[in-house]
Length: 190
Image (tube, rainbow, N blue to C red; front, side, top):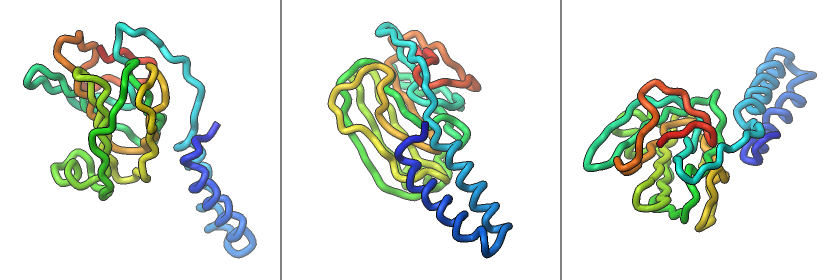
């Protein structure tokens, strides 16, 4: 399966490949590789959601780059590369609210300027859980849900590259540390 957000890139790549094939085989091969890479980026494999109301699931695939504790909250920084699965899933059953939506640039999300100027969106699930997505170099426009209530493991956004920051209350027993690989809908965060 392919995410609908990737249809445009796939159509462009396939069209350019077909047009260039009789003209320049090297350029057509490059366009074909672009198309195949987009199939990989926008893949939507079936996953079995580990559904349990007592835990917080990882909302994204990625690698934990840091965990900070401050003011009774834990912030988990997750780096998302082009090779990860790009569907963002709800970590819990909850009402959901978008508290910030900003169009922006595609700078390195791990820099101060990137964290301010890049495209980003903030989801608030409840008073104890927030998720912020900051776009990276290769992020296209965000696709996100307009629902007000989501179930654990339900798709809430598509995010191709950047950093996810999950903020949770310190009352939860944190189960991840820096360097851990996360699988959306399967890895228990807390």
